[in-house]
Image (cartoon, rainbow, N blue to C red; front, side, top):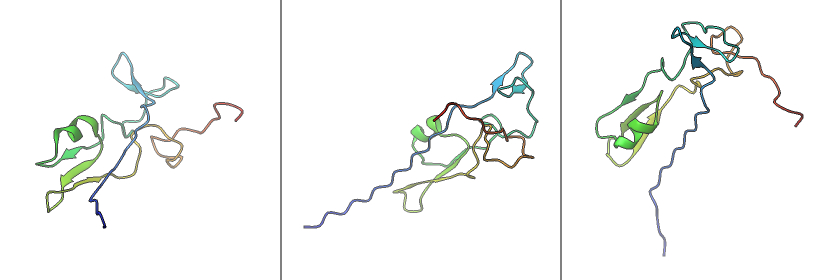
Length: 106
């Protein structure tokens, strides 16, 4: 006896944003310096949730495009692969770049 499952699971884990709002509404880096206006964050990224997508996705997903598949049986999630926070994975000249530093001996 063969049992077939039609199962899609996509998990996106977004680390905490490394920037915070200052009293003058400028986005500040972890060193309290104002970030460039081109800084890509949860506030500046684009989110698009298509018709028919369950409400869960609009509550818990940001910086993505989500649509139902043509068959209506699957949820397709698209993103640009760029984290919406400061990261050492950006090129040095990018506003989201931050240098890497060790948090411990290990």
